Amino acid sequence: MTAHATGPFDVKLAPQTFEGAPDGARLGRFTLDKQFAGDLEGTSRGQMLSAGTDVTGSAGYVAIEHVTGTLHGRSGTFALQHSGTMTRGTPSLSITVVPDSGTGQLEGLAGTMTIVIADGKHTYEFDYTLPA
Image (cartoon, rainbow, N blue to C red):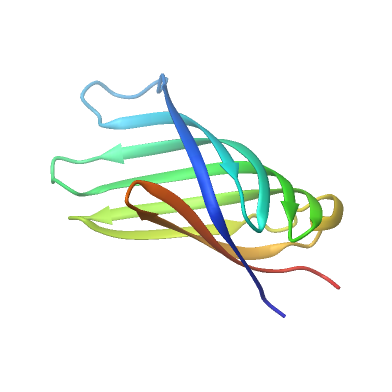
């Protein structure tokens, strides 16, 4: 049975050096630090790689983050994998729990997360399953 978790989160991105990036390439590397509230209480740390283009509104990113916290009262850790694309202003984003990454009471966690940004505030919608 699929469960649903929601809540706000804060995110801090810090630019890092992108070692080996060719001159003139629009490549970026960032560290991620998040603070989750609501049904998922916890923190995450991760890294993001991005690529921009000469076309306004077109870009892409990938990221991995490690989440530590409590999800509907069950504590543990898990990893999230991001793949995002912006095509001339139209976004497409996939965030998936890395298979078999759950630990503690979150062992066996599977699911997908959606990020909503409205009025400068971030919220998450997390549909997931856990073994009984």
